Image 1 (cartoon, rainbow, N blue to C red):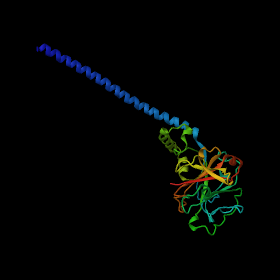
Image 2: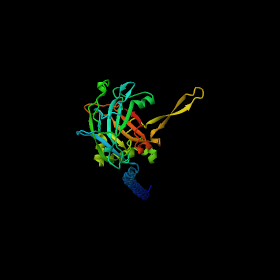
Image 3: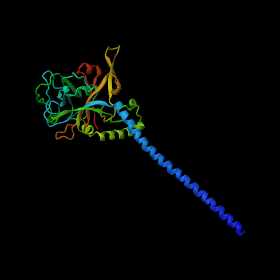
Image 4: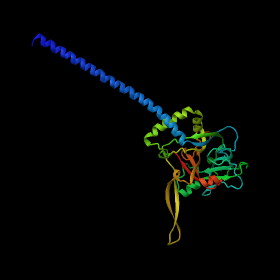
Length: 321
């Protein structure tokens, strides 16, 4: 091969190397630009998502009122002796007195709370089985194991414990004061997110945005963590949504007796019922009050009864960890 031919080959190879180098740099630049653009888009998407969640929050938030501990003597309390009027008897189950759990004067809830009518007065008294932990029985007896009583009388003195109430079923009082009206948001995946057009895949994003919202509102976070009782808002489920057993009576033509047919109904989808309040275990107090295994009592009432001020019939459920 002549020197000229060799020179031409070297020149061609050099040119090819330059072309390949330029092409590589262009492709690398494209990749870098794409990565930068993706990062920008991700940041924008996060910012947009947060804004979108704020809109979601506004649509699904509910008014609620929290009751938290106070050192001041108050009618509202967990434990202690109830101010039970003479017309109300201390509830029992199979002859055994139930523990006194809590009492709340409904007139102490802030007005325009969207939970109970403004003119509502009187008090709720809550009793239940605590000493033996969770109650596992049939639905009918289960409703007897947790009892809610109502009276218009809020001036009665404290009554004494029944003599046959176990000493371990008596608790020192923890007095309570109510909060301002605060806006509550669902905190568990069981809160029927399909009703809010929130997909299961978006739930983690929802929780992240909710934590950001709580971080911005330390007052709400403080109330939520320290609340003993909450009226309105959303239930804080421990074991998924509550299923209410409804007994439909059918007549047996042979013996004319009523046969109970049990149907499970998601109480959140029961259009006649509304969540009234929940009571948490007080496991961090000096006198521990455990509801089941550190659980929560949920109290429901029919919408019609609530609007009419008829506080005679409640549906009570309990969940524990």
